[in-house]
Length: 68
Image (tube, rainbow, N blue to C red):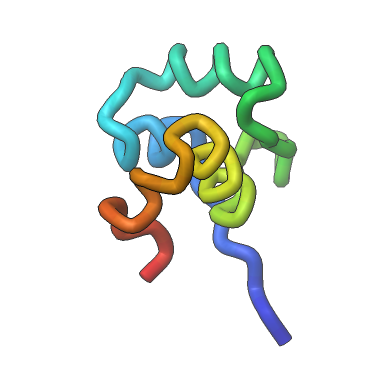
């Protein structure tokens, strides 16, 4: 059984070293998938990795410590 890891918009912004409004802009423009869990907008770790692979052609995920 696998459990999905989720990050809030604020946590996602901190991981990437950018501001929360930039994360929300990526969500609105469909560059980053997000969902509401308990009324809070969150990004699944898997979706964050996919977005980074597309945006940075796989260069950034190896340098970030996401989820591990």
